Length: 261
Image (cartoon, rainbow, N blue to C red; front, side):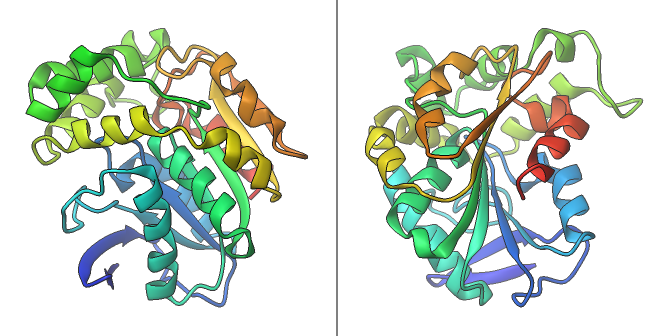
């Protein structure tokens, strides 16, 4: 579906069901340089099991109008503008990588509008190497190659796709290539600059699950330890999955999300 958020056109996949704001809503947010398609399996399951789903293309990504927002703080506030535009009073937030930081910050800012959190491929801080950051801002192809190489676990690089005939590494690279020039760098810079997780953890009171990849080299599982201090949170580690667990291990990722959402 397409909606207007702060005057801009925004695209959100609804899992094959019309979005009904009367149902419990879940907003799915992708990581740096990605779009809504990374959540394809998970969003469809929830949409057909009693949830109203919005898997968004964040501003400047996929089918959504730009420009891309350049900070986690700005993106967290944007989430509430999205909910207002969709007619949803509250929602559970599921985020991957950059999307996890957005979800965390949003829940800390307005807890009355967030029912639950699912933080996938998350870390308390997400520093980015200068080489990757500069390549991303310049729109150089090597940035996409580096993210694909480091973002996927070993199993995904040698096959291992659950759907026969699919190529996880190739699909990840193509997705990054289709993004607007420089947007992946803007996203990575926003992650690199965000230092609000410690304060956010102190303010988040909603049920939370951390979904981590046992073979994640971009945000190793140990880097999420400070986020596990959220009261009542639980941590699920998906072995043999790298940073992109939603596409590498879609079934197990769905099981982890279902445990909370």
